[in-house]
Image (cartoon, rainbow, N blue to C red; front, side, top):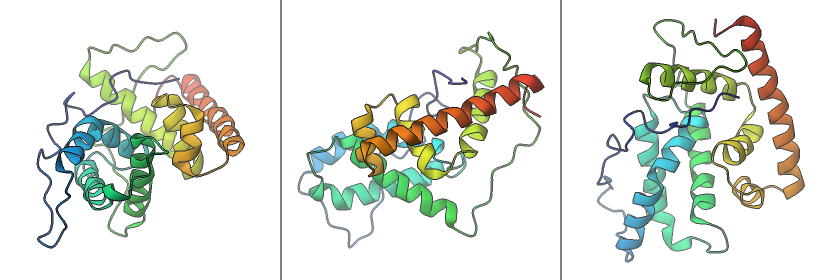
Length: 204
């Protein structure tokens, strides 16, 4: 399947995410400031990737990422250490992404010109070519958009973030067997989508 190895912030950094979050004047200042700083620094790229893979457009992802960390700032004291930090963060990111997509002013991002990329079997992606990486990400976005939200979340965490299925189930708040069932259905759907593109020889 199409999986750009460098599926991270396009700048290969997180420089577009503000290094200092902007909070309202009445927001509580956490007593564990260093802990929050560490959570932000160590996980901002993960949250950014997750938001993109959950359907937040490239033009909106920086703002939505900041929105996630504003919530993290407010709720850090309630973090349940029985789960991993990333599991907890993904749950927040998933809800914020879902709310973002439901907003009336959000419209599907369109590209100025159609992207064409050879996805024929055996094709090797040139990771050093930024244009080809961008096209591969666009194809991945299109394929993920074909999944419903429940299957998409499981697929993103297990296949793309390589998270253990026990943690995936916690992140999406479902029984372990249900998570496996969603993954199987998502894999089948993704494989069909890739096959359709292979038969066409690229993206229309």
